[in-house]
Length: 189
Image (cartoon, rainbow, N blue to C red; front, side, top):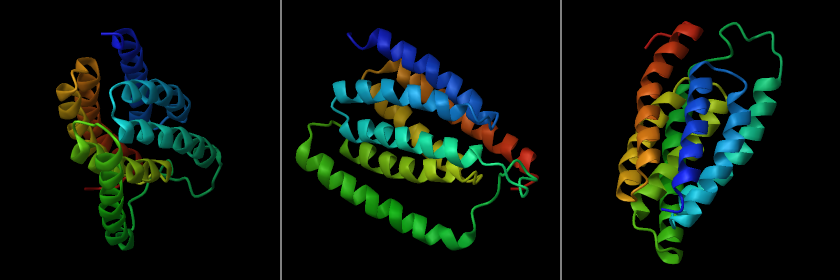
């Protein structure tokens, strides 16, 4: 497969990215930009346009993360990690549902994707997840658990086996990351 060497490089960069995210390292944003470029190409080549869009969004989100995490703050007692205020739960659920429907209509109508529901829902969740990560809300790990399961299984269907492996690793790191960020912030379950 023509994507094989590119996919391997993307997976290696992705492993570095998730390690840096786990560590709550500022450098995750720089590596995220590079990884995004690789996955835009990969998903365009496999007709997964919503996922390509997701990684295009990640480019912007990574720049936003660089700016937000780069700011020094006196209220950074817990590494800046906090819980998402409950008042945001319902709006986030509504936004996720709206994004899913919008993405599904666009994908179903204008692309040849084999996995429109997976792409739509995981893209909507990814948009929300990156915002939560940039704001250092611990709940971003919950979102990534769901997204990573979807990506792992869907990439298997697409025969992107190395990427499927990457997202299975991401799922495991999401669990470990949640625990680590809880410890960094002194937030209990």
